[in-house]
Image 1 (cartoon, rainbow, N blue to C red):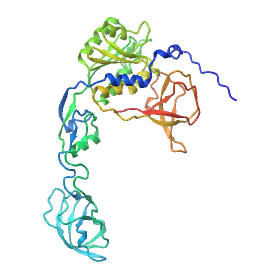
Image 2 (image 1 turned 135 degrees about the vertical axis):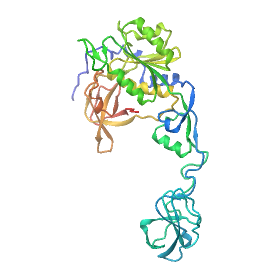
Image 3 (image 1 turned 45 degrees about the vertical axis):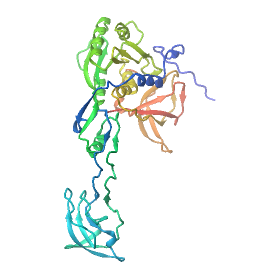
Image 4 (image 1 turned 180 degrees about the horizontal axis):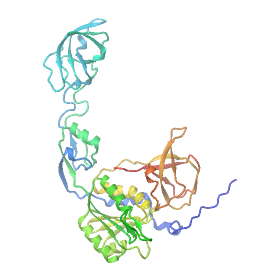
Length: 426
């Protein structure tokens, strides 16, 4: 029997057993966000070609059937199958030509055919379209050797949408597929939720703009560009973006101004319990409410959520990987709730580990992971780093999502079943 020593790691002591009861679970944190994240309720009308990324405030219903008429699914010849007597082959006179966008004015009710093109209306009397590769044409006569089935290569009217049918309900975020459905429904204008207004405050005296000159104890700012990119992909309006120093009165002033302008204020750093962590005291000075502070997650334990006046507040850790992970789990859920977006289906799925794992138990650990293929049973295999480092983001471009390592698991064998959540990149 192999005996493993308990995994112990130096550091902040975040996994001490006596600290864990004060932390809530990931699911409890998400439930509190869902309970308190309500949309502003203001709506507006936008043209369809300007609606991508917006959230519907009213359902979209089809203005007519789609397609609006029976039409050809490919280029060929429209025929009446009932007129094809005997075993064939059949010789049919071509009596009409029907291009797309033109009405069919000639009936095809006997042993005749109409040349027809994709999308063109089916002539009266015809109930099949024979693709042009299956006929031989000789002048104005076609030779047909195989009997087509009724309905062949015809798109029936209303087969995609019935008139008045609900194509999209309110709460859907409009991407390319949703835009296509709205266009097919004849919806040239849409009623949408007002774009969410977000303010971003990245704190820390040590932080400097990426690429700027730094003093020995200073670092480049990762969180501002990372979160700005994430917010742009989420389709929100960034009304303010600023750097805040480790100055209590200055933070009070900045948070007050941002909360007056935004639906959501996001901060990074300054939310732990150290002497230089000033964000939560600033929130308290403004009469803010903290709905949770501290989640049993690694990295990102200090992540917090609350309100400053009418604005929601999301406090992310200062370490870049911790900020990125907690944004993916909590930030995106909060944006969706405040935008009025309908609850998404659970995106986590089960995968298997590529290697054996040893870790310190205590909190659910989320590690960036890469899909590495499939095992013999067709299950996805993930690879990830041997340890979590909350300040390291150099390997994020290689990751496909986050793997959830159970809080109570000290070891996992090769092929262990774990949860995986892909990154939200839009």
